[in-house]
Length: 196
Image 1 (spheres, rainbow, N blue to C red):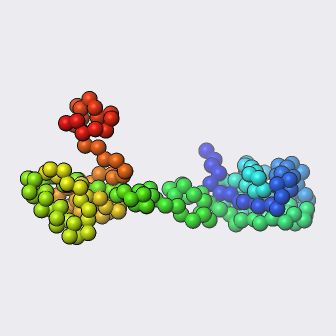
Image 2 (cartoon, rainbow, N blue to C red; image 1 turned 90 degrees about the horizontal axis):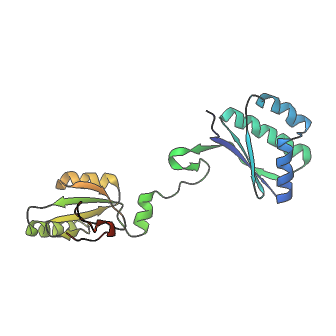
């Protein structure tokens, strides 16, 4: 199954010219562009427009590079001023095109909002042991939440959480804005309460 993981972006000065350029690409190409396009006859390219920007999508880098040559020839032949990108590739794992700057990870977003993206839950043998461990962790720069005989300690990354969990014999859990402690059979669990 083909996908459109490669693209070129053509930014035309005026929206009307972008519309006309889109029509030329999908219809009657000029002589040089038509000749270059013969190598693309076995490929199916998707073309779209968003305002003054025209996009050409292809399934392979080779097809996108050939389409880039066609686009440049068509722009030259009609004297259209435009800013044309190089071939861009979709980075699925990062949900972005390779020419775009990486966005924040969900962990960075949680930290920016003041919440720890990962937490380590440590159960202690007694209330006093939990208090002592909390004091020790605070001295190390952590801000543990103490709940009678256990602690919840926030970390900035999964790696930090795993290292702390190994050291303290705790369990790593995703963190975030809200953490609810409920018994599984608690009928009020849906409300996020602590009705134990």
